[in-house]
Length: 143
Image 1 (cartoon, rainbow, N blue to C red):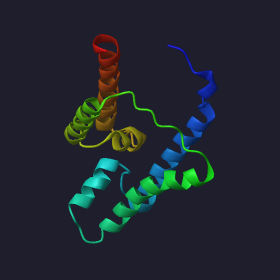
Image 2: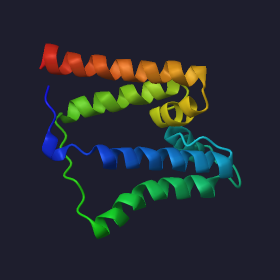
Image 3: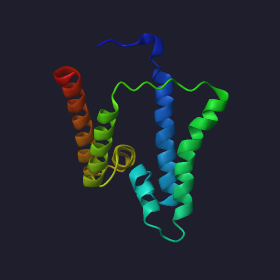
Image 4: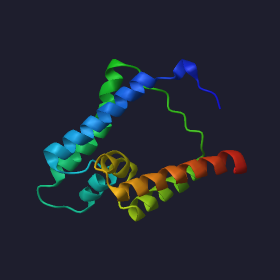
């Protein structure tokens, strides 16, 4: 494995990580809620009075942010090196894992670990291990 030095961006990656952590901290500080996407989206499927606005605004912000960024800078080219069937199976597996793990990578990995949650540590280790194993199997054993 080699590093693509022309596209190696440690400082912008660090800044992005800091912004994600800061946003998650501010979200829990001001709303008392964890910024886990699966929980936020799932809450839209179970209508509760007074609970829809912030959920909709959060998800709208996830869509609006790259659109706003694209007004000032070119968006990166998206390249997916997988077929449709692989993406569908991967999406289903992520969805099943999110349900069994009682949260998604953002909920456990960003918010749960920052709260020193043992359950989030185990979940994040499981997510990462599964990802490493699947990539190894698909790239080196199957394909």
